[in-house]
Amino acid sequence: MSIFFLYLIIYLLIFNFALKKYIKIAYFYNVVSIPKNRDSHKTLKPKGAGIIFFIFFLAFLIINKIYSNEIDFNYLVLLSIPLISIFSFADDIYDINWKYKILVDIVTAIIIIFLFKDYIDKINFSKSLIFILYLFLIFSITWFINLINFSDGSDGYLTLFTIINIFLNLLIKYYAGIEINYFNILFCSTLVIFLYYNLYKSNIFLGDSGSRLIAIILIINILYDYFTYDLFISLIWFLTILIVFIDTGITILQRIVINKVLLKEHKDHAYQILANKYNHKISILWIIFNFGFIIVPSILLYLNNIVEYLYLAFFSAFIISYQIIYIKIKLKCT
View 1: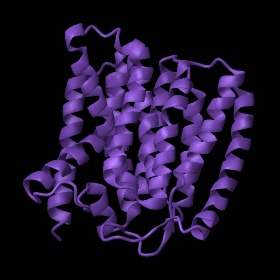
View 2: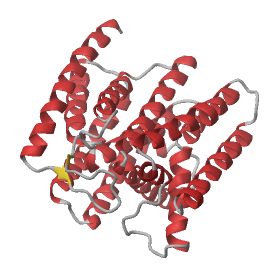
View 3: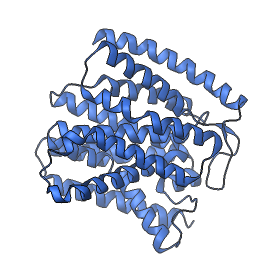
View 4: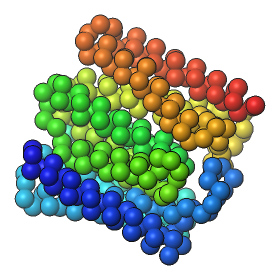
């Protein structure tokens, strides 16, 4: 463990250096985000930082595979991230048509399902209907990738959301006596460094290569925990990603019912409204508030068997939904 943390410090120093260099390279080769109507930044900003995460994660996973027999989780991540990360970086540079993005998302979903096939086959599900289950999983994974990718316009929000999720997962596993995955410690640490670069003002964006990479790692975590550990870990995952589910769900309904347009670029997410009306720090404080006063207390009440899970899930969903609807109605219109 102590050796790992020594290597982690060295790794993070190199990662920090690489991120600094990438900012200069991105400006030089014009890999930049040009401000659009829905964006809060007004000047050119380098994007595509996700490729740096990918390269460093790939190096860690390959070295880990060569010199260690650590759990299957690392192997699953290793095989799941290359296609979508490389393609998404190309999209950051050339702005590829959305149809090809969806195709790559679906192929990635199929790869993930194939990697989890042995686990899925153990589910008590009718063999005649297993095809429907696979279609459902392909749809769900593809949807989740895009759900997370919708947040790439607010890197502070997405980064902090992911850090909190992974940190809580590590903490709960430690609390439950479950072996902690070193990759997730590495993942969380690199995100903290990236967040530092965007703490006071935006210096670099994750781009699609970053947001889609984050989505895949979250998916692998959720599926691996569901198939490997007790159900309570999966139930906690549901609570921690609830805020993104609800925000996206309400926004989709709004786009279909009120705006009558679903795919057009917009600024209708609650965190976008907060960021554009005030600043990105307010959207970050909003997510900290929800985790600190709603989600984490709900998890503690559940873990200590004080309140039934369904009551906690319903209460959390209701409070978060109320906030999002209030933000959309009151703040969007003023």
